[in-house]
Length: 280
Ligand SMILES: Nc1ncnc2c1ncn2[C@@H]1O[C@H](COP(=O)(O)OP(=O)(O)OP(=O)(O)O)[C@@H](O)[C@H]1O
Image (cartoon, rainbow, N blue to C red; front, top):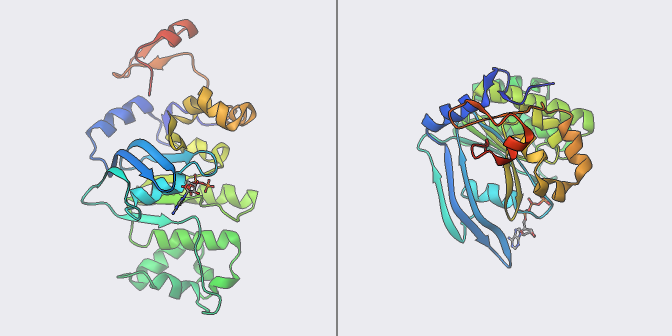
C-alpha cells in the first residue's frame, strides 16, 4: 500500500512537489474554458498541467471528459476561454476510439510508420518499451483488445512526448489486462519522464500512481489527491459511498494537513475542519 502523502516512488512529500511545481513552467494552461454545443458541455474549467504530473479525470458518462481532452489538444475550439501550450510541448494521444478500415490490411509496423517523420529506430524503441516487439508483423485487425491498446500507446510515444493524453486507455481490456496496462503506462511515464492526463473509470486501480484527481461533470466538481477527492461529498454523491470506500482502502489515513509552507497544522478533526490552510 502506498503512502499517498508521497509522490510516486520517489518518497518526496506532496507539499514539496507543489512547491517544485510552482517554479516549473506549465506544459498547458486552460483558462476559463466553456463549451456550448446544443447544450452546455463544459463550464468554467481552469486547469494547469505541469511536467511529470499524473492527473486522472473521472466523472459520469456524458460529463464532458473527452470534450475537455479535445479542447486541451486543440482539436475542438472552446466557445470561450483560452488554451495555452508551452513552446516545448510534445503531445502523445491515445483516443477513446480508433477506426481501422477492415478492407485495408495493415500490420503494426506499417501502422506506426504512418506517423510523420518517424524513424525505424523510433518504432523499434516504442515496441520494445511496451513489450510488443513480437507483434510488429501482426495484422492490426487480428490484435486482441489489450494488444491494440499497447500498439496505440506505442504510437502515442513515437515522438517522445512530454505529455501523454489517454482517453480511457483500457477500453476493451479484461480486468487482469487492465492492471497490467496501467502498470505499463506508469513504467512508460517513468521512462519518458512525461506528464500524464488520463480519463479513467478505474480510479481504484490508477489511484496509487495518480497525483491528482479531477472529477468532472460539466464543471470541476472537486479536485485534489485521490484521498481528498474520494472523501469529498460531491464525489460520493456522483459515485456512491461504496466506490469511495473501495478507494479508501488504498489510501493512507492521516490526522493532519500541511500548510502552504509544508508545516504540519490542524491535528485534530475539529481543528482540521476549521483549518484555513487545507491542502487543495
Ligand atoms: N459534437 C457534439 N455535438 C453535440 N453534443 C456533443 C458533441 N460531442 C459531445 N457531445 C455531448 O457532450 C456531452 C459530453 O460528451 P463527452 O464525450 O465529452 O463525455 P464523457 O464524459 O467523455 O462521456 P463518457 O464517459 O461516456 O465517454 C455528451 O452529452 C455528448 O452527447
